[in-house]
Length: 95
Image (cartoon, rainbow, N blue to C red; front, side, top):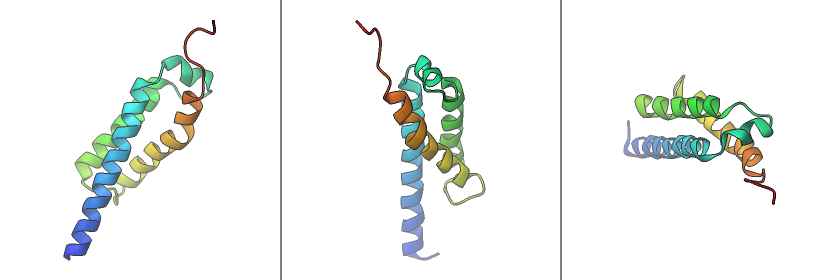
């Protein structure tokens, strides 16, 4: 493998690891009631999916694998679809 290929795979690994960690951390800090109110999968469900994505990318050391691509896709789905829906809900009391 050439130097360019090695750097490219390293950058892809770091970017995919950052993406999955961001999705996992965001899934943990959002209120559980927001997931139900937005009509999405529950908070423990998304925390498990994104947490598993973090572990898969960490263990596989590359997003370009049989399990790495679905892990990146799952984190992307959370960040693009679920996060805006849960984030857009009003917080706390309506007083």
